[in-house]
Amino acid sequence: MKIPLSVILYRLPGAENYLAVNADLSALYEGIKLFDADNFSSNTSDSLYLITESMLQSRSVSFLCEQLLSDAVFICLCKERTEALSSSYQGLSLVCLYTDHSFSRVFNDILGIFHSFDSWDKAFHLSLLQNCSLQELMNISREILTHPLVVLDNSYTVLGYVRKPGEEDPLMERLIEVGYATPELLSFLKTMGIISPLENSANPLTNRYELPDGRTVYSMMYRYTADKSTVGYSLSFCCPEHPDRGYLHLMDTFNENLNLFFHQAPFTSQISSDSCEAFLVYLMEHPKLSAEKLKSRLLAIPGLSLNGSYLLAQIRFSEETHASWSFIWWNLKNRLPRFRPFLYQEILYLLKDNSAAANPAIFLSDDEKNAFYESFSGYPLQCAVSQVFFSLTEMSAAVNQCREAMNLGIQLDNKISRRFKASLSPAAISVYTDILRKYTGITQERLQKKQRFYHYEDMALFHLLKHLKQTLPKEMYASPGYRILKQYDTDHHSSFCEVFAQYLINDRNINKTAAAVYLHRNTVLNKIKKAASIMGGELDDYPAQLFFILSWLDSLIF
Image (cartoon, rainbow, N blue to C red; front, side, top):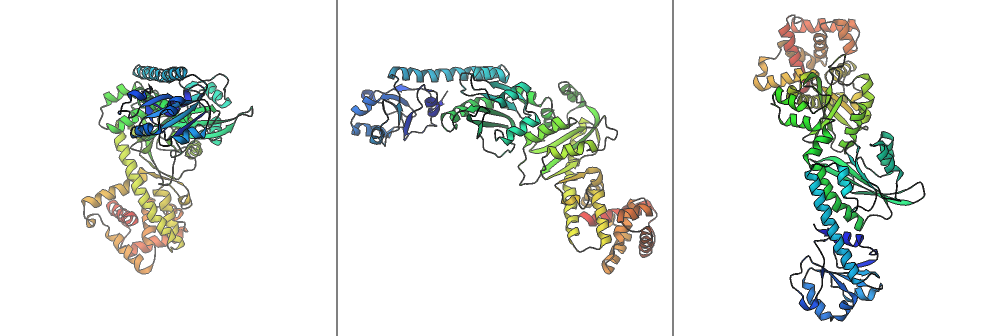
């Protein structure tokens, strides 16, 4: 195992005082050697040597200059800190280590550091192969780490920790006591800057804070990722100094191994067993799995059945939004247990089990709306919702429904938004307001808000029309009555098409139509009669009514 030079100096007893000249402290080494100037080898690349101050001073400058061709780094033991020594050998890769310890003790201490790290590395990898818990891995690492540390998964549940005597931190102790970050504790950790919800924040993130006893200490947060998603965090507490030198590199070395734990298959299954994330992603990747195979996999998933009443939602964030999947996942898990969030191809999906709901087609009940909006912390989002499906074998169809609802909904949304900005009559604006409510689930006022919902059941007719247009000429499903009425509207700047379409959609009920277009029923009745006279009839047969609606919808979105 290779160790950074900065970690060696950090772990070396009494090595707090040193001066590096032309030495890369992040360079990695497998061991240290005694430097013999009389038998100097030219093959010294990546070699680390321990020398004495007298040895450095006894050699001529010309002799030392010959060694500059190599990449070796020399650790020189010095009694006193003098700038003259280091300035005399500016071209040499040198670390002046100011210590009273003897040459033999320092050499043995460095050998001991390499030995302990090598033993730890082997034990850590062996434990990984044995699928040990993270707490067992932390116990193995107890002598490697120098400050209190707690490791959380992406739901902020404590996986493991290391305590250091005399360095107790009340925040860490509270985390360990509860076993997870409660909403109040999580909010406080964010306020203190100890943990960040943003995926694009610095990694590692360091911050200064004060303990109740008045001590000023530092914390460090590492974020672990797998498949571009955060899977866990490690939080270091009670660092007496800013961890910008050896401690930072020490944690880099430790976290290289810890990353292996977060990427191993058993951990992926463990962390996702409660949220079904791994299972649902697997289901997305294998849409043609038989019901028998799904049943066998569901045996390990608590609270989820093959058959039931399900809804699937797809969430899309704006490009400038840097939403944290981990925080959203945690909020949904704890506040809305019927929602099962998971990521697939960098898209957030929500599977909702509505089997026990009075109306399985409702995505958000009144009791769930506020918790849902708050779970996304006010981020602008668009949400597409499938129709109800009754078996997990139908998940692929639900995914396609979400995709179509999202694309068609945004397309309709944008077109209606442009129409609102145009100079429309009050009656036309009322009509389009109703279109928004009926076909996108939002009102004109809601259009200005951050969350927009698109339900496939509202978009299904648009979806049908989209495929009709791909397979049939427009003349095959176009309505002659609509073409006549639309031409009249164009010539006379009227809105008979919209009113008559609402009349058909509302079961040819005058009162419902009047409420939909925000006009008096007598006004609507006169418009319907006028439209019928223009077209030569009220379109009494169902095919004629369907063609009229299809032609009207075609003008709305395509």
